[in-house]
Image 1: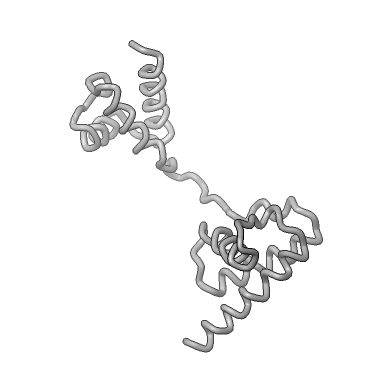
Image 2: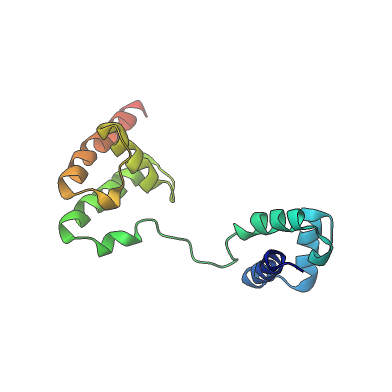
Length: 143
């Protein structure tokens, strides 16, 4: 057996453990994904596809990731602006997990190139709040 195949089989069994699947559930899922009840019966390409498909799943009971958790680690000068940006995104109805991306998209439209909130200084963050608040006011007027 080749080393890449062994790594894929090991990863598949790690996924099984992370998800908390018993043997029957694992085999049912494997059969639904590949048509085989055993990973040993899969060719290398099918094994790679199954690992890729199952590897992106979050473990059951895993805590939801907080996309704003990093804000508490930045300079105090920037924290207030970042929390304000978060609040405006929530008021706009932007779903959790998409708020940072939304704000970065607005910042990119302002500057004409990709902007990351983590890399922006306090002045840039302050400039971002204006368009976000205007959008929020506009949407309130439409409702």
